[in-house]
Length: 327
Image (cartoon, rainbow, N blue to C red):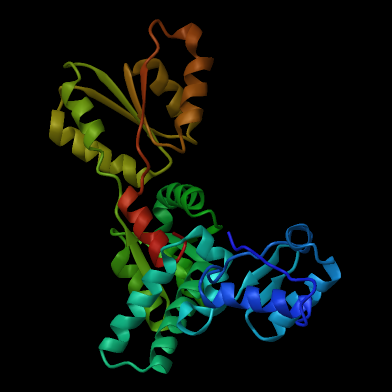
């Protein structure tokens, strides 16, 4: 802690003494950049000077550029030159203390490749602007014959990204993109070729996402006893079609498979009354659970209900967040 010594009988005014001592504390790094100076009340108690005198000294220090006042917070030592200026005092750097080092290293790398500071600045700004525009609007697209898969993706992306996501049938994608000059199109790898053919001429980015591999569910299916009845429920008719093929290749006629879209009430009711095991996607789970509960009087032994992981793989979600500048 800086020790202040004010000589009241000195020919040097008390305000000048205090000014010089604070200035020395800053120059000698006793008060480093970003340090909050004592309040006028605290300094008055320490030095015995009137608060008005201390306020005057702080104004003089601010005029010289050594400190700066932050409304409602106090007086802070101002960083100089390569110390980072006001950047080091930015609240965002208090939240991400390593951020400035990352920026410095990235800038050094660009300069090492021959970029000028002006060119490096343009590169940073161009990338930031691109990501801001891409995250401003996120469109999920799938073929209209399987909008259920798109609904699954929209639900999971809105939850993971924390921004609105719009579902657009592939057949309407071109028209939707004509109405916007920014955004990002997201689709599964099943439809990546079609989506890029539509979006690329309009300079709109398309990002494919990987779907969940269902390894855990496949292991469960392989362990089911022969002649078991398995139910699979999903929003997506496309998922159900693929499920039928995969399960038949795994078990043939050893087990009975029943599938239902969650919105098909008739099939869903029949499924919960017959299946010993039911596998459900996230979007359908609560409806399936409620249907089982409603049919409990007609069921001798309630089926085991298994909840699938998210339809979109977690790695794809994390990659998408980075690409959109959201995390």
